[in-house]
Image 1 (cartoon, rainbow, N blue to C red):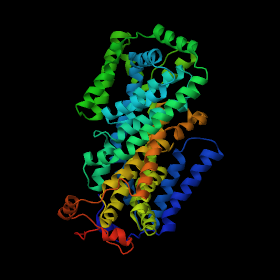
Image 2 (image 1 turned 90 degrees about the vertical axis):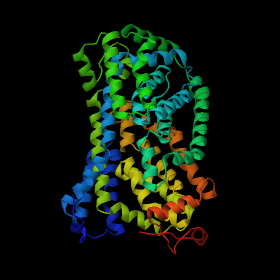
Image 3 (image 1 turned 90 degrees about the horizontal axis):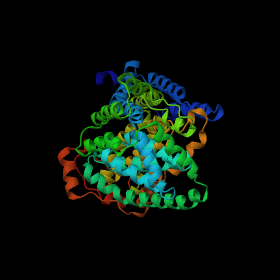
Length: 507
């Protein structure tokens, strides 16, 4: 651990220097993605990390200081990497057990193409709310829904948009979610008040998204020719290659039951792997060695039906390594930016231009979004603005529940919409969107994940109108005093905002 006295001589970067690694990284990233047409953002982000390191050294930091910042952020996010590993195993084993094929089979026989997208969003929201993990939902139920959508001849990007909308919204309001607990923790509020305060944006966004998916189902999809011959071919192929039974859904039921009992996500997901392995041996005749291979390298089958083969030949820990390596590099880049003070300098420069609650609330959302965009880490996009802006809200006399909602929406909900972000990289990998193989049209899932981007838009609109923007209660003010929370009492704050503030202890 670095001795704080070692950092005394380190300089704070000015705005121009702080922006240098960010701008240069985005330039290199743009060249890789758009000029070369190669969707592998790993090396551009690694170059960005190196540029940030050079900036840090010019400011007086030693490499060990920068390295400490890099590994601190990576360490904080290791539970998410562990979830990725567990989800990789689950995908391979649940396909082998017949759990995923059974979900696809029943989905194709029960659901109507017209309501499929709406049903997919609602199902993912419910499962994610129960599990507390959007990633776990995307990698399990989301994968099965991609197969059902393919059977209905629905474009992949429409199905992926509905899956992402439901999964990340369920995660956003689940008390079991790590990001839902992180946002109130860094802003000094409690998780249940935080969830309650998100309802004014969550409910309208979900209802609007639901309406859009229903309209799309009854116009675009039904009007385009959903091939029932194709559905019949897929279901008959699944029936011929797997034992199909409702009993095969037990591994999924077990994981949901453990989540309801508030078991931690990683043991719950691994229990799902073990349950899937037992079911695979009993019902599908899989051997132990085959299951070990499926968990590590993914499931493999040749049915002669291209749609089935492309859907089911996936999973395994190794399939997640592209995503994990991207996550680790992106986290390292974010950690270096934070350690060298570049992110803090950029945020402070922005705050000198903002003098009202409307401006602060809007900037908080965009700061979380920008941190997601640049650093590639949803955790940093919540933690950094939460720490930086909380004193400003207190100084204005507004509840920090406003801030926790802003950073949750700019952090959790927008992360899957940024392809090189940890969330976006996982979605692309787990749903088999094939972006790295040139299927860039599937990036259309981003605008089609309506619920994810509608929520922050509604939140910003509320801030401009003064709706659902609670002032600090007397109880909150007392807590600020008791806990010695920092309060920014700036003459730059508008008189109306300043008048609502109550002088309290600062630190």
